[in-house]
Amino acid sequence: MPVHIMEGYLPLAHAVAWTVASAPFVVVGARKVARISEVNPGAKLLLATSGAFAFVLSALKLPSVTGSCSHPTGVGLGSMLFGPPVMALLGTIVLLFQALLLAHGGLTTLGANVFSMAIVGPWVSWAAFQLVRRGGGSLAIAVFLGAALGDLATYGMTSLQLALAFPDPIGGFGAALVKFLSIFVFTQAPLAVIEGMVTVVMVNLIVQYGHDDLIGLPFSAGDAS
Image 1 (tube, rainbow, N blue to C red):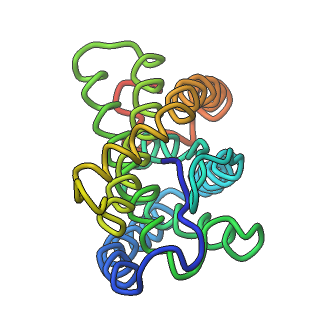
Image 2: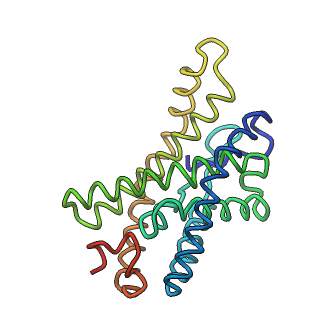
C-alpha cells in the first residue's frame, strides 16, 4: 500500500518490531548515499529529485480503510536509479517529514511504514526493473513494471502488517490478510498503473536532460548510454 499506517494504530510490540527490522536497512542506505555523494557529486541533484518525487507522489492519498489510505509511493524512481538501499534512507526522510508536517502516517508507525514503502517496495521495483532489462525488455516497460510492482508490493506488505496486528476473530491471520488485500486492491491497482506511467515520463526526462549525471549509477548499465 501505498499506504501509511496512521499514528498509534499498531500495537506497541508491532511498532517496535518493525522499527528494529527497518533500522539496519536505513543505516546501510545512509552509508550508500554518503558514498554516492562523495564519488559522484553530480548525482546529488538526482538524489534530491528522487526524494522529492517520492514525497509528492506518496502525499497524494485516497481514503481506503480505517487506519490507512492508498496512494502512489514514488520510490521506484530512486530504486532504479541508485539501487534499493538508497531509498531506505530517502524513504525514511520522506515518511518522517510527512508524519511531522502533513500528519500523514505517524512517528510510532514510522518503522512499519518504512519497512513497507522504503524497503520492500524499492527492492521489488529494482528486481523487476533489472529482470526486464536483462531479459531484453525495453527501458519503458522495465521502468513501468518496476514502479507499478513496487507500488503493489508496498500495498501487499502493509496488508500483511495489518493482518499480523489485527487477525480476524474467526479466520485468523489468513482471513485478515485476504480482507485487507481485497479492500486495498480497488484503489491501489489503478494507482500502480498511474505511478508506472508517471515514472516512465520522469525517467525519460532524466535520460534526456541529465544523461551525464547517470554515468556510474546502477541505472546506467546500458540504459543511459
